[in-house]
Amino acid sequence: MSNRTTFTTKLGVIAATVGSAVGLGNIWRFPYETGQNGGAAFLLVYLICVFFIGVPVMIAEFSIGRSAKANANKAYKILSPGTHWNIIGIMGIFASIFILGFYSVIAGWTLEYVFQALTNGLAGKSAAEFQESFTGFSSDTFRPLIWIFLFLALNYFIVSRGIKDGIEKASNILTPLLFVILIVFCIRSIFLPGASEGLKFLFHPDFSKIDSNVILRAMGQAFFSLSLGMGTLTTYASYFSDNTNLSKTAVTVGILDTTVAVLAGVLIFPAAFSFGIDPSQGPELVFITLPNIFQHLPGSLFWSVLFFILLSVAALTSTISLCEVGVAYLHEEFGITRKKATRILIAFCIVSSTLCSLSFGVLKDFKLFGLTIFNFCDFTASNILLPLGGMLIAIYVGWVLNKKIVFNEVSNRQSLKVGFFKLLIFCIQYIAPIAIALIFLSGLGVFNV
Image 1 (cartoon, rainbow, N blue to C red):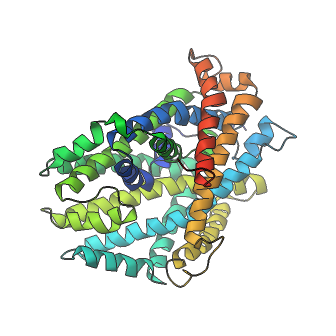
Image 2 (tube, helix red, strand yellow; image 1 turned 60 degrees about the vertical axis):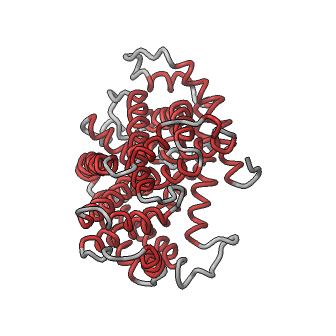
């Protein structure tokens, strides 16, 4: 495996891994969760969870991927031959496929809204008209599919070109672009009248707001925000060079991913408070409320186009990493070319995302375990496969995998000082699995907090 393709630069490693973690969840899910769970108090708990749960599990995934230098399934077969621990990799592959099914639908919506903004189709509408327009579009049979297929074609173009010429090159452009757009938006947002109230809500904690529910929601947001348990980090780490500092990379990704989430809060909360909008809305905030706000700003066309390009870029950086999980598996396990593996995966995604999209319209009454196809894919991935996979990764690295392997990876064959190693293993052995188990059981409705 010594001739395995690797990322060629440190920027490529960071851009691709941050791009994998940063997605639509950072742009609207984080503000939504923050808005519903106490503002700055939620942010504080979230930060603690990122660095005491998220980063240790990320380092664990990195250690597995780079040590084995193989796809998410084969990595466990190499490190623990003759066992069934590769079930973690299989779960990650299935999770990535489930996520691609429903995520591509939302990504397609963002492209539709880029088109609407460019053609000035968002101008002059009332809040009720934005609602009617969104409902009509999302429940349409054919129009959303055009954008979904275009989005998947973009994924094919990037992923089929490989790591160096496809994923790394795209990430080196898209990830910095995402940060630049966010920063431009934040500068505009903080100069809105009444913006100080939104910033106070985000950065001035009221500790009385912290309860068991806030802690649980913050753990869940931190876990899902960092792309843990879905095979992407294990797969990407298999392309890391032997000189990549795993712990430094994990901390950097944690910081940058959190920065995107906070910048999204700086973008949204001042605007929401300035226009008297409830910041605790879900998808409506992005596709209904914010377009309504933008049309009241000078240069509304520019801001609308820029915002939906931001969402599209965030979606694309995430989906190319999700595609790579399945493509690496098909390419390496079945010995087929990368282009053929990508075609097979995209073909499957076309079917699953079509079914997810139609569940808003003609298939809305078709239910799996009481859920629409879209909601079933979302629930299965987010509430079962991801937390269960993350918990098993922590147990595997903390209790099963030889600690010498982990130490060698974290220390780059003992060339780096790792005085924090015992703390890292403690977090992986005890803190992460217990915390993730709570998220898992809560997600299944076993208990409510």
